[in-house]
Length: 80
Image 1 (spheres, rainbow, N blue to C red):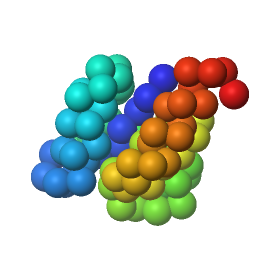
Image 2: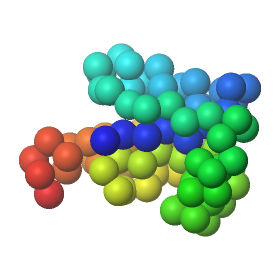
Image 3: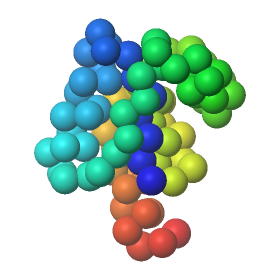
């Protein structure tokens, strides 16, 4: 599962979601402004308070790091 921890006003969050949509990747958008528990989980898994944080089957990607996102998605396809 892909989870995108984001805020509504974050431009990089919008870029991540637009990219995922452009490659037809299904993801769950988690608004950390509205969901306190999700915000705490995001900080726990990433060690930071900044967004976006992308969780791709347990692999954490900080920010819109396209090469790391692609790498994590490729691992997911081959089951590594």
